[in-house]
Picture (cartoon, one colour):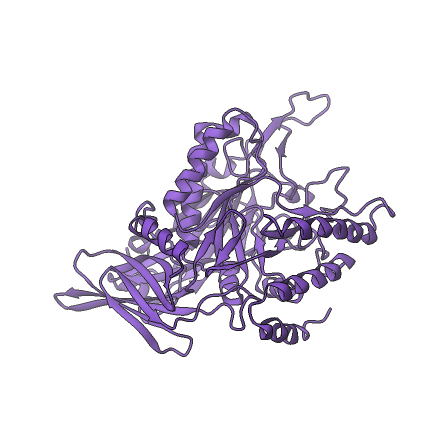
Length: 592
């Protein structure tokens, strides 16, 4: 082990087991296994926006108590998707308030008749505040628009001879000074100028406040005693990979755990027993970023088997977690992955596209990753919120390094630094770390983007926030972004809104970056990967046009300039001559 890493491990090792302990309950990604099933609820849901003056007619009339169609007309609404751009009603695009979703879900007979089966409803993302009912019974509430939540509905679906259940989700996209991101509602009371009850939602960020069920909704099962959470922390001892694991179990205090680490050929390379331990992998294949190694993004599989003895036999649960063995360290002038200097050359992104808004979409996601690889990008920041879990899974798979950012954008009001805001921000960071702590691609947590840090309460606010995040995960650096990305508006000279201007400005940036990266700069992330939608304003004509690709993912001149630069940077930093050559050959197939 390198001396610096050895010292780090000696200091942090005893603390690492606390990473999962501060987080109450697991948030493992639902995967099928011999003991687990999942049922996707993607597709068309019944939908209605509450256009009443106080936006509370749905609660006053209790729309959740009966099928939504019985209380009035409904629309078909695809899930996952933002609701704003799907319909033709202009009121819906900028709607602020409660909207209602409903779906009837057929249930397998064994789910409803086997008391040893636990049935869980999981919502990948509901922007922003969500209430959930099953068959008219309130089961869950969640605040925060970018992270998953789930609830055990076993008792409800196993209470009688049910073949289906009715799921109702009410979602409110109103932003206040205490939400993340913050916003403010301005009511206009002058009826000579505005209709009665007129209000506007003001925000302090430069992207459209899309809303709805943005990520998959699904049902999944586990046995009544089950693997609730897994925390994995990896390290190196010379050429031996160390996989430190801790497994949390719910539903029984008497159980046995077996843990197996399999390589990509499904060969067992290490095994252990018990809820906590260390697996040693001689000659381990390390998880390397894209373009940094001839075999990047190597993933092992950690197979966990839970056995609970019962009077009538035993209960078993199985869960498989992808694991990348890698280390992260920071010096005064370098960012190290596996002990070697890593230079970020990538992008800032948004979850944004035509029609679907921020809705998760596999074809769009794969297209974006193909563009990243063509570009020679090895990293991106999840500006300005946590992205879908599937995004991080592809980053693990392709070796794309991630700076994982919270929704702390637009924090400029004094009220947004209150204790109420701080407690919510701490909760969001806990949920984000709980969800993403095991991804090898995630190398840094970003707690906020360009906050008004000059305000008096900001110092205490961010010291508390950063310290708490370090307590949750001391293995990764924590930061908040002040102005780390660089950008080029289309503008004048040479002519206003021309690609030539964007290209010229980037070339000037690159001259400076080439000087400073020899001293202390450890990376460059262009703002932005692709054009994205914003609120309508006089200075944003159908969105923000700072992307190197259009919103439809067509390249601008700047994309080709950046591609030349990023592949040059990759050549300079490659540790094996064959690495970039082989990746260049592979990516020569990516033509635009």
